[in-house]
Amino acid sequence: MHLEHQAQAIRIIGLELRTSNAQAAQSIPPHWARAMQPDALAPIAGRLGSELYAVYTHFEHAGRSNAGLYSLIIGVPVAADAPQPPGFSHAVLPACWRAVFNSPPGQPERVVETWAEVWRRDDLPKAFVADAERYGSDGSIALLIGLTHAP
Image (cartoon, rainbow, N blue to C red; front, side, top):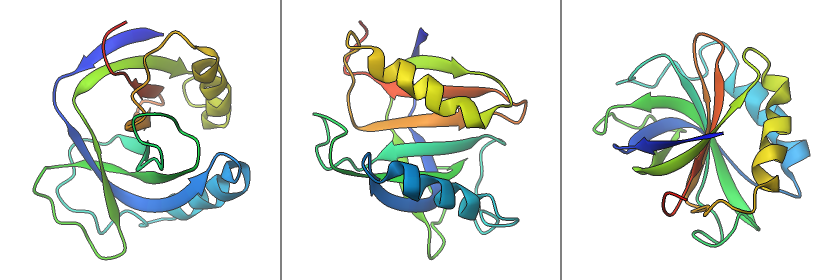
């Protein structure tokens, strides 16, 4: 884990799932399958880069915890003024300090292990506004955990 200051907000447009931790094991895998269908994200214009993001946001208890309902938006980074196509949602990763946890490259099936590491960390001032998984075209995978301040 290392700290990174994200200086600019990142806007993501993608496909949204409303779920909870209690439903995650059943609801998230089919959502990923839907988002990974050929051309599922093709209608999105104004893309910035080739990375894919899975953003956890719109927490029922925003700023306090990830208990209750939240949204998982799987999509791509776009320009701030990019149009949102019908049937898509958007999320914003606000500028802030982030704890970055690297997951084994090219092994998305192991991301759950990295999340377990994140949730074992009680020493991080988690913001509970917008956290993300970032998938690079080079196979890199990083979890970006929003913090209220640099620890």
